[in-house]
Length: 160
Image (cartoon, rainbow, N blue to C red; front, side, top):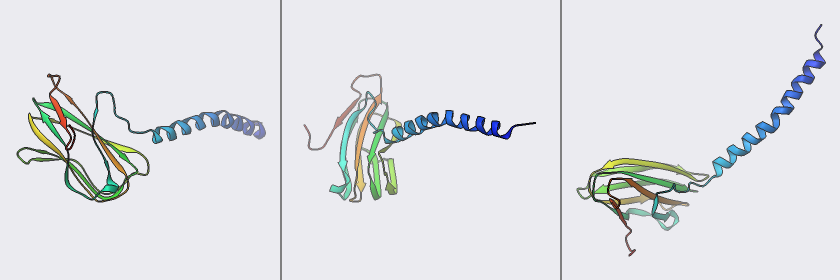
């Protein structure tokens, strides 16, 4: 005959043993969600924009000069954004536009981010922002994979 109280005690002892493990996993998950989207090594800050200072209509955040074909990587750090519209694009000298990020009704209750990467030919490019005035900040970081050490040059309007 099976003793139901013994099975019940075993079940509770297993649950009691698993509770601390579950608590550790939950705390780690919450902390991972709260971690700031900091740039990885090798990325350099291109621009930081406080969207509350907008609206922004085709504002050039930076000029990027590529001396050879490179794989250009952009990392976007989105902090506490609540905007009806945001468009970030990379525009070549010839006027060709590549959408880096296009969003409507963008809301980040915590820090978030996105990566964009594309192989681009040599030339001059502009990083252009259009966004409604709203809470939050956008930071853009860049890096490139190229054979020449200085294949990517970044110039920010108004800086020296």
